[in-house]
Amino acid sequence: MDRHIFLVGMPGSGKSALGRRVAQKLQIPYLDTDVYLTEATGMDTAQLYAAFGEQAFRDAETRLLQKLINATPGIISTGGGVCLREENRQLMHNHGLIVLIDRPIDDIMLDIRAEKRPYLAQKGREEVERIYNERMPIYRSAADVVMDNGNGFHNGLAALEDLVRRFG
Image (cartoon, rainbow, N blue to C red; front, top):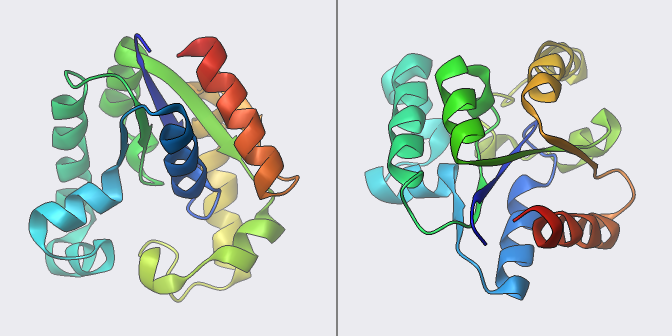
């Protein structure tokens, strides 16, 4: 691999589950930005959000991206809001391929676990749809490739593996 593969998309779209499995299979580095921030601070993303607020959380994500661009290329699963900042989109574009993991909102709703998705915690379907409709145009405009993850986990794995092999 000669460049990073940045996975972007809504919380619950499959970025972490697919990215981890494909990286393991292809024996390439993998990093999940939310997991990294949790390990670095000793607080999960919901706790970080609550303790320091969204701005500080987003600043930490940007600092992490700045650090990661010099690491050995691999698959990087980004938090759902990483792509919202222009600076982050430019960093990812300049140092890798941005893959939008697109998943139908009905599937996302089935998989949301509020304690692991601070931005979606305690929100009903209407609010999740609002966030989805607000973010999807940003994700789509940033993405170099859009990957459909609406046809089951194994199909998603095969599609992501193919993308990594072709573009990594």
